[in-house]
Image (cartoon, one colour):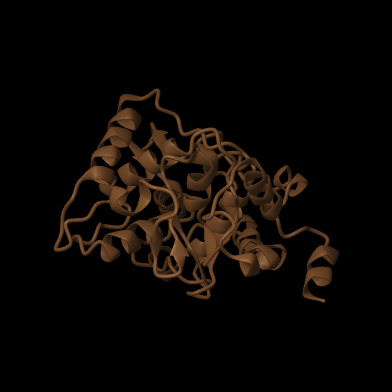
Length: 277
């Protein structure tokens, strides 16, 4: 019944116009068909539930927020430039992080969204709309899920033409392999071999692009959390699991790591929004 109701909506909840031609579960199935991977096929239940992914509803909430005049300036986000021109969402997320001349820095989706909410809509930095970022009810998760959905099925292709884009990507590589913290771990400890596990969970191998694209396809609904989570949330979660010092949200360091991990999946189709264990 839930799936029938989903399909009956006038605007399909895969949201992005071009993205609607291919659903996230179809993108994942194409990857499964292309490679033998215990990581991609580890949860039959998740595969069955993907057509009814709760993140699709979160994205629909984000669509309403994106097009509604809000904030002290009472304007929508339709003039926000995510890298492909004001208001252009198709494929924009797949080409982030990238350098933005108007800020003079490399930005990911979360930092760019904060910038537009503050400069275009006039929200203050401590406004709940800007500050709250991690739950289904937050403006951020709703907006990020909606914006990202327009890159579903598109290849990751973050630009590396600007010196700062290359610098952050290279810094992210150093962070990925830097051992630190009480456990003397790095990202590669968990993500450099196929078939490795943490308890029941098979871990993705960063050296296998077909696995890695699913690993970095955020926003995604975390079944174990009952919430949609972002790339920035995943970065902080990994650092906590490694018992390293907490990374600052929206910092150049966090964007550097996202730049590197996106580059590792370059050319592979994004699964947006995804559903994860």
